[in-house]
Amino acid sequence: MPHTGLITLEQFIVDQQSLYKESRGSLSRIFRSLELAAKVVNRDVRKAGLVDILGNHGSTNTHGEDQKKLDVIANEVFIAALSKSGEVAVIISEENDDPVFIEGCENEKYIIAIDPLDGSSNIDVNASIGTIFSIYRRSNFAQPPTASDCMQKGKHQVAAGYIIYGSSTMLVYTTGLGVNGFTLDDSIQEFCLSHPSIQTPKDGKIFSVNEGNLQDFPDGIKRYVQYCKEKDKATNRPYGARYIGSLIADFHRNLLKGGIFMYPATEKMPNGKLRLLYECNPMAFIVEQAGGQASTGTGRILDLLPTNLHQRAPIYIGSSNMVDQCVQMLTEDDSLVNN
Ligand code: AHM
Ligand code: MG
Image 1 (cartoon, rainbow, N blue to C red):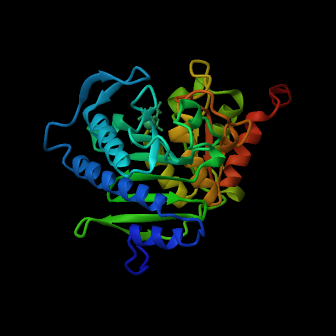
Image 2 (tube, rainbow, N blue to C red; image 1 turned 180 degrees about the vertical axis):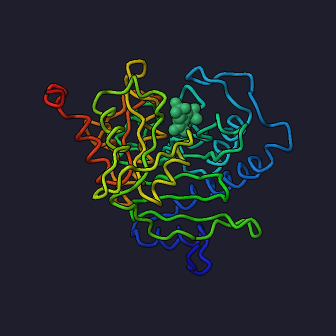
């Protein structure tokens, strides 16, 4: 870990917010709530094997998936902490069908979209999982909030980030002034700046995709996966294949080392699997701020206008030259390629 002196997340955010003339400290208060919730969830994740919080909760979420006990706990903790911040009018969560409107905060400015515990199929096998968050400003906060307040393009995010509960716990975020990473020092229970000004390499050597679904991928993506595996010294191929099946863990590794993560559209899932508001958009904001790219295959993720709170989008995200190559192969005319 590079030595950067002891700068806590709280101090860093206060310093960054003072760069904005208009700042009233609202975002700092939201981050304080996110940080508190992250510490509580981290504590529960760390003792997941010791107490009876592993396994299914016995209910299903909005996508018909089993909810794990930890998913439910994390959802409750983040919603409770954010509600208490007094700055958030509405929360969209992967675990709730409808937006959660916060009582007494009808005229507050902020909207949060959150995946409280992403990669939850990995909980029982002790692999990294995480929390993803995205923050928007409401356009008209004189009126009580509605679901349509939340239908904003990703490029309007005010801030986005994730917490990875891995071999250490880290919080990585952006407010549009670059990307910074903070590692939780267990002994003092503070997130401390450990990865300042993260930049992702333009060219990487890792490709991450669920290759088990290859037969269902668009032809261009089949070609790109094949391209990743071909030998070519000039472009450092073959690339290494790395796929945990936990978006944050796969994304975080690629962000630091360089690489591409893909979750393509398939016939069965014409919009891919990952959710736009609380999975694709926050990651796209972070990767762009770190010098990378995120595409749906036909356009920039951050330009997609949501029409549904839980809508999905195909995603190709990571090192910018790799994303360019992938999108180029995806959109190449099949008839030309086959001739
Ligand atoms: P979840 O939100 O239900 O945990 O699902 C999202 C997860 C991502 O973390 C991961 O990238 C993806 O699902 C893996 O999907 P698959 O198992 O189809 O490869
Ligand atoms: Mg998820």
